[in-house]
Image 1 (cartoon, rainbow, N blue to C red):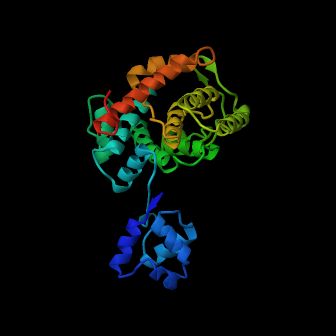
Image 2: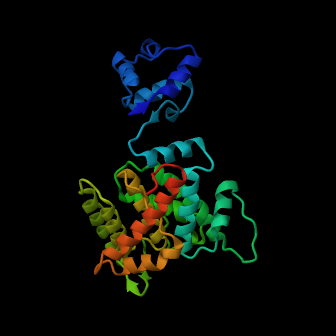
Image 3: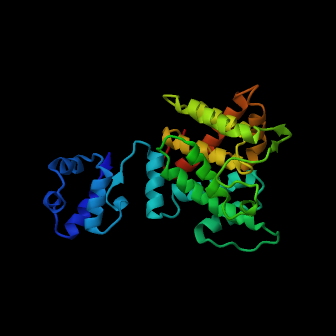
Length: 306
């Protein structure tokens, strides 16, 4: 469903009624009825109205979603609300996901970057890439929210990598393919990953099999994450991209997302390493991460306490 209250407000300001759009822009009465019923209007029609009112298409309506978490994140992101769910998610997910991969930034420093785009110098030298990747990860979360309802695709996955790694020292290396699959073999925890020439086929197969599922479950998303990490399609940044994909897919399927806390990374790595032999370890760790997300929801009265 859609709310066209913003459109109605703009029309009222200029002294128009919805019916006036019919003769002014040649819009059919059927479209006017759709506005009243909250049904989706064709993009080209919205573009005509936006041009008339001298505004962006996004300023004309609000999509009303069944997914309360995604609705809240979209609304708070658009309104730039401070101190809400969107704000807290950005800080906590970015801090933990980056810290798992070795970032030197503390949670307080991560919060400061998000809130003020500044950082106070500490006694320990902080690699500039830690700051860049923190800022980039904020953009990745924004992107995940924006494309949450789109079917997962290799383009979306590559865009996550592009957003995360652009501007880092890696992006200036000839062999490092930012926003594209790896060109060199990489090893993770002593385990050989998918060879570069095999990655495109492996990723196509992984995404295709996932998209064939009719009703995706939490376990399906965790399984995709585990298989993605085994392929390890990018030169670097696979863990963070994989967790961002899982976040996006949880939003798409109205499942409470999970945040793997840095303090649990040992359990997380164990689950990934032993996935082929035992699924339960990784699933349990991700369920624990889901509990961490639920704690944030309770903080904002979005989930009943047990």
